[in-house]
Image (cartoon, rainbow, N blue to C red; front, side, top):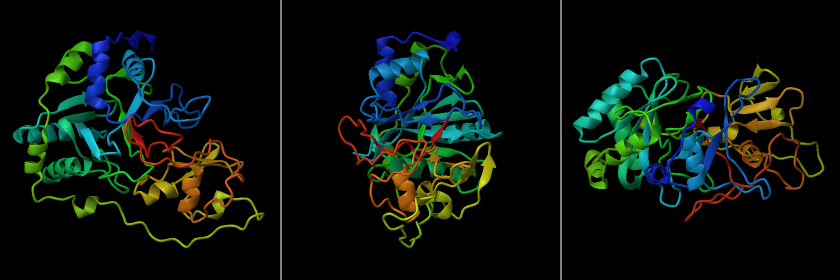
Length: 355
C-alpha cells in the first residue's frame, strides 16, 4: 500500500483531531487478514510493557492520515455522554440512494452533511458545533430515516443503515461501537475513500470539512422537540439468569458447557453469539464469539469482550482471579468510565466496529 501513502502537514492533523476525536480510546485495523475469515479485524492497541490501553495522540492521527495505520474512532465520550459527530453507515446495494435521500432531508432541515464513499456504500457524516448528547443525536437521525421509510439495521435484519453513536449512553467500562476513521486507508479494500464535495487530497478535504456548517444544540433541540427513540429501536431488556458457578478446585471452566446458542464451524473454530455482547443488545448476527474446536478452553470475542465479562454474562463469574483458564487472548479487568484525557487502562475493547 506504499503507493497510497501521503504526507500530512501538522495543520491537517490538528483539524482532524478537532473534528473527529471525542475520546482518546481507539482501535487499529489489522494489517494482515485473518487466516480463516480473510477479514481485517480491529483491536484495542496496548502498551507492550505495561499492557495498558494506548491513548490516541496527534502522532496517531498523523500515521493514520499518512497511511501507516488505520484507526477506528469512538463517538461517545463517557464523561459527558456526548458526541461531536454522527455517522450514518450504509453498506448494502441501495445504500447510496438511501443516504442521498437522508442527505436531502437533512438539507431541508438546514443541516449540512458530508458523504464519504466506502467499499460497499458510504458513510454520511454530520458535524456538531459542540459535543451534544448522543441520545438526542440518535433521536433526530433515526426519526429522519423512519420518516423516509429507510430501513435501520437491527436484529437479524441484513440490510439497513447503522447510526453512530449506536448507544444512547455508555455504561461504566464500555466503549460503544467504533467506526473506521475517515481519510485513511481501508486495509481490506487497499484504498482511500474521499468525501464528495472536494477534490482528493488531505488539505483540500479538511478545508472542505472545516467550512461545512455545523449543527448547533439549539437546532437539534428544535428538531427533536417532543420526540423519543422509537420503541422498535430500543435494545432488548436483558433477561435475568440464574447465578451458577463451579466450586473452587472443581473441573475447569469450559464455555461449551454453558452456552445454548447455535454453533457453526468456520475453519478451526466454532462461532456463535457472544453472551456479553447480547446483554448490551449487540452481536445480532451471532458471530462475535469464536471458540477453538480443538481446545474449547480457548475462546475470544472479536468485539473485545473480556473473558471475565463473558463468564459473568453466562452466570459463571471467576471465583479466584489467579485460576485463569487457557485462552488465546490476554485477560483484562474491566475499566471504569474515564474522564479528562480518556486514556484507557487495560480496558475492554469496542463492542464492534464498522469499516
